[in-house]
Image (cartoon, rainbow, N blue to C red; front, side, top):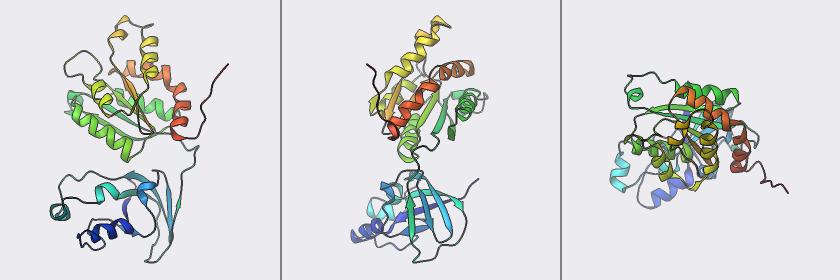
Length: 272
């Protein structure tokens, strides 16, 4: 597994101290404190160069599961909101006073994706997940970098938390969910997805249902949705491996243009 390091902007620590925090470097568990760079304004994928080291930002912020002494004293902690995490691409040495250069990611870089399987039995280890790997394989064959694959129980709050983290923190281009789109009372994937959405993108879910109806009339019972949160597209897929492969196959080729528009590397087009 690639080594990860954490970074904080010195200016954010300074502002926090001016409010009475009185913390020293390393108090938040950060590995590097850098003056003059506001990491929160940089997108995931930014390359950071300092000394002989090369880093790549992978996540902005991180949930604090057990509040530290700083949080208990101040009522907040800046690491979960202002800290960033980066993968070490090239090991080396960084010394105090070294200049750090930030290089924004290329517009034509591979799209990133995450896959979430919703299954009570799968989350308990009582059933092997085949839907998630099927989606992952198709994405990778299409050139996507799949950064995470998760298995969650059919609990909407857990799904919402992960959708927000992956869209806001990891800034993935595409999130695919599998399962939880039927009529069962435990099937809450569409509701959780809509709850975190900024905008609707119904055509993708409609296209999946339309094409699936050519295979089975039961496709009309699928409640899956497709939405946008910030610059991330979220698409619900059915739960079976066969349905995942069919559904994703219907839309995968057409998603590229929409994702380029979200990323800002393509223009809107029209026909006359």
